[in-house]
Length: 410
Image 1: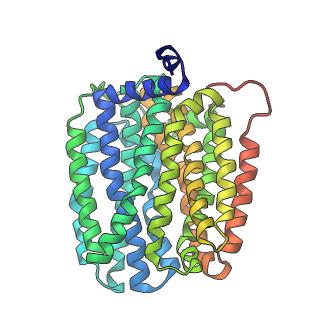
Image 2 (image 1 turned 90 degrees about the vertical axis):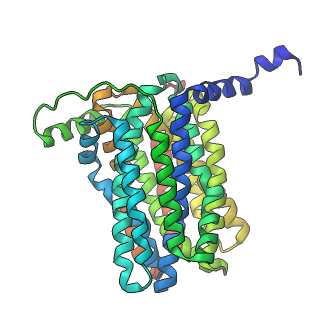
Image 3 (image 1 turned 120 degrees about the vertical axis):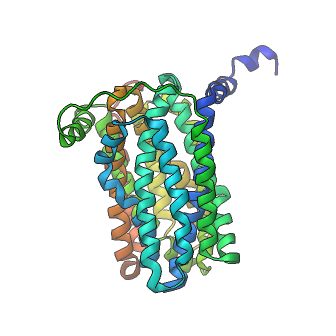
């Protein structure tokens, strides 16, 4: 291939945008923080479920672990108001230090009677995560140009979800060798490293605006802006439906593993394959959002996700692994499209509240889906729940897709 043809091919232009993101010191550090903390989170996510499954033998109680982590999303708008009251970089440092200090408490969990401590720590973990995500979204929007936010969020998704290639297997292996406390200590160490990464950021933040009105009024401002924006509302609603169905699907993972005839630790293989699909989706996200527009990109991902979720009901290893990869590729689409749109169109002083509110509207249904899945997985089974969730996802994809006309950037 000649030099001229190489310079004008789509691939180098795509890589050029990625290079522009990675050459920015602060953007690269943010991605490093995502990689480090994402590794520990993915490892603990799996280890906690296996831990509860081994102590109780219950698929429903095991499914409550992610429920405990997602439940604080209900308070997202209120926590987002906190994010807009302070500088975002020190807040990220404080949230990371909190979890690095708290996770070693899980060393005391060793029987069914001490499971309350595990669920309590996971709840605080989720609360810190809500604050962390809103603060990081606002900080990134100040550091990365609007035209590169889609590429950054794609790389962020690739880094975060890519941890599923190795972290769940590492968590399962660590759990098998040394038990749940070892996975908790690993996660604490990753938060300590992330604290150092965020401390190294050099982003200059403007002082937060003085608060006006009551806390309730300031919280409502973010919700009003989000709900009144015609470009954000349909993406966020589609994201909520997506995560509702993803919660139902996620609650069936151990039942799916049982149907395949494997031990609970085999869930690590399914999550690893799902991570591979997410790596591909993240790398393609920036160019896809620019070419298709946010709604078309999200609708295409939802259609793929719908087929994959329904297919995972089939009790065959090859189908389960393929469906997991497709779930990993389809699920991030609507999340990336919604987050990128929020960052692009929201004024900086409102961004913490709007981002946290959007995350609540997207991820709170996941709590409901996990709860419903945990309650229904044993009486109904994955062969009923998964096709039903797939049908809802497909209907959402059809509703989100624009009726016609050229793709527009959002």
